Image (cartoon, rainbow, N blue to C red; front, side, top):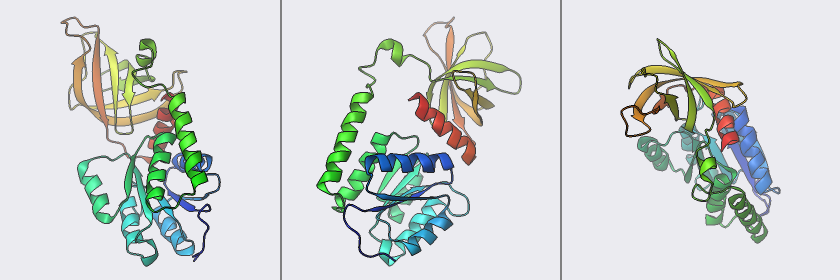
Length: 269
């Protein structure tokens, strides 16, 4: 196992069973830190094997993976003498308190929720590596410059024009056992979606199981996801409100669906 590394040549391990996520994270890390060595693997078994063959300075690991979960990878990592203090970032769509507590108890250093931006990823990496004084002044300066550029390129909610703020993030079809509702996507993440449907006198019901077919604005299909209705609310305080907001919580854990969905979310942010 490698024991001597220069401060500028840090080794990063990316662990995720979704190929798109692995490629996206790898690309983001290399853009921010071109002198880092990045290795990506698709499951926990490959991750533990890689860590036995090479010394890594930072691990970016998905939680939900077949065979060996991210939590199990974390627990194995902390059981190894060479990795007891290594920075470990859990990258996941799960943000429930019980999951966060489990990760903290197992020794995680930080949490990064999906979907995420390059700015958020770089900030977490800088925080983790700075704490152990593993970044050179040049690397710190480059990361700071990239973060500043990302902030300038991305308008805030407050500064964006009203027309831009209200622009839908895509189109979808909401299907229950009886009918199909055409809708526009108001907000979307890997766990739930908020859509708006036209008031035509018929609505899905709270706690009803539904299927959401998410489409690109071009009309191409992105993902078909199973879920259930968590809330329904009129967009106006009027008896004849023209539109109704519907929140759907996703029940699918299919890695391919989540990979497509994550890619779509990144494209409409």
